[in-house]
Image (cartoon, rainbow, N blue to C red; front, side, top):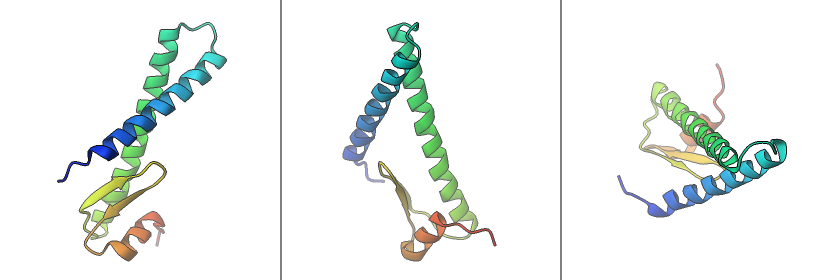
Length: 101
């Protein structure tokens, strides 16, 4: 596995931006909370969001494996993701548009 620090840093930057955005919203919605409470809830909400994205993408991988499509890696982009298999062309598209037969 090749470690790509740029992708880790980009996700950290997105995490910080989402946290600050949520914190600003919580300040507006709940002015009676303390600043620490705003940041704690913003960080917790961001962690839940990123956990949901991770579980969602892992589910794509598990479905691919269940359908016999080998998965070599999963790449998370800011607004999308892709997985790399041995025949990643059509199989990647099929996993994104999974139909119930």
